[in-house]
Image (cartoon, rainbow, N blue to C red; front, side, top):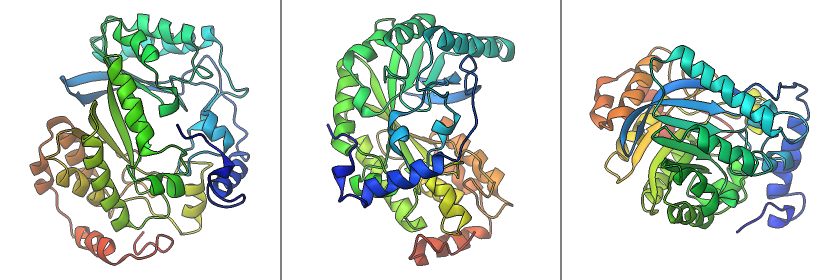
Length: 358
């Protein structure tokens, strides 16, 4: 399996250059966080192979992604929200978990059938979440129907996934694949693994009785709008061909703090994707043998995926409706004059650093 290394390209170029810039950007963050408080927790609805569930989503506050400590992905600011010092004690992580259970009890009439657990890095990386904590979490949610945990491919092993499967949970591992195109993943996202590593991770999860959910990134930096849309369509179709990958979640890029994307954005060299692009990808891949969903974080804002401002909420509602029903006809209900502008951008934009429209 590929390993993060400055030797990927000539020293001072490529991945090494990305990491140097990212370390400098991240060093400007001086915030600190309570190791007994989760980063986020919320309730929602999610589509799964077994139908739509009420979901409890938990973002545990850990010591952060080890790849991000080296520099990391160009668009990801989550490590800026992680606890200083590189690790969080077992007892503190369980306190975070209890906070999330209390939130659910206070805000839902019944417990959620689906639980999704994330960190600012990889839940299955035992430097973030140790084996003792992982097994305690599996035991805590043994009475639920389904669980999703997120991890980079490096840390996905059958025995780790088995901790959840053995509790009778339908278990999925969410992998931040970002794109099925290796060059885009390396040069635009600055992620070190290859598509074959994703396939191997899916096989490991499958061997334990689990499945895989692929996270894709719509419009990383250094792609035009049209290039980004075509890359997503190819990526969804390639993921659909991977045995065990039953769901693709396409995440439109948003501008997070302390990232290279934010630097480009402030210099006028990056525009988040259009919501029309999200709709186009979902509609074009609806016939694939895989569930395809999207949750445009920050939709309608300058730093998030947006159209003209007038139709953003309507487009977002259509996307959410599609997520739950997988019916592409929902997009026929949304129209706006700005769709012609988006189509012109997709056709004519030639340089990622000079967006044709803001």
